[in-house]
Length: 435
Ligand code: DLL
Image (cartoon, rainbow, N blue to C red; front, side):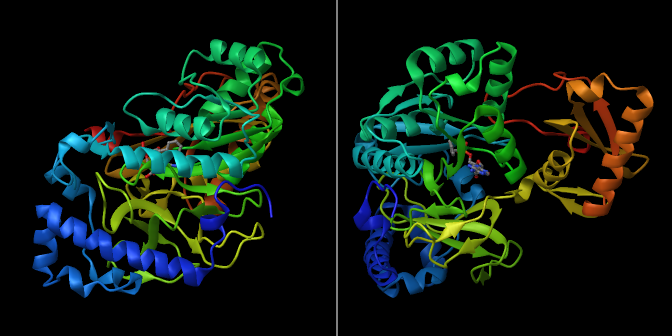
């Protein structure tokens, strides 16, 4: 058994967990029925009374909550407490429409800190660690969410926020961070800047990174681990559920442990809403059992993942979710082929000579979808003869075609010409949506 923050809850038997979840769900349903008119109406529409929910096995009787419900109740309509009891508001901008506004009571903030303390401990952090938090601070939940967890474990917390990369590097060196928290794309950018500054990462005390907030592949993990000489952990969360700290990888790195004593996951068929068994891909749905200000029942995340219920080598009993390969609304449909940007990333990073920086440009020309993939060459490839570069572009094209069945135009671009990201990377320009 490795290091853990909350042995009691992280290692409780599945039977104990079932009992705890059931008790909490019954209370939750009663609370939202009384305090949130929107939920009361939704339950009444289904002919449901709080007493109909007797255990966690009744979860699938409850209605789903969608992003559309959040829009309709913007900004505070789903809050289950009086505004006097709300001590913090965060929001996520999303790609379309209104912001999603989420609120926290004092107890919610304490819970969040506890869960983040679990996560950071899973990545080997202790009170002796120095944790540089390079997620953005502000309405985005990344910065403050990680910050409170880092303080909870008693680590020296450096609230760097994102951006100003040269200053990040000075802080890494001078304050001696052992743990770096940021998006994986920003971690890569930091690695690149360290190389440019001629700093040998082996001279830094950095041991691990806690990277999330956007999809990233196993290939990207290897790249970051090699370039920063650290172990890179995946962390998952979303503002609606609490922020970072919904799920986190342990040292086995075989999926992320969901904090199931507080958030109950389900996988559903996104088209029919049918609940699917473990080991099956589908849309991730969460019910928050204990959150006070902004509880959510069966919230459809639109993230595509798989749940694994077999026990993990670390001894934790909680279910693990696979790295989400993307969101259902990020899935590109190009001439009928469904593809997630992360699948293209996997293919690109399996090839040598390309840097892990790419941009997908989708368009519709003469009623036909087109996909152009801009990929950066590494310095070695860039200095090679033109005919070799052309050959290499052709190799990538063939590989994308054979693995994904997609015909794409490959444009190899000079090193360092694709814009770097300090937060969530923008990997797709879909011109079809612009016109
Ligand atoms: O991104 C919270 C967070 C902050 C998570 C810091 C981890 C670290 P939102 O801005 O609301 O919240 O975006 C949530 O980001 O529904 C996923 O689509 C995506 N996402 C988050 N973590 C991961 C991950 C924060 N590890 C949305 N892998 C989610 C893939 C992720 N996608």
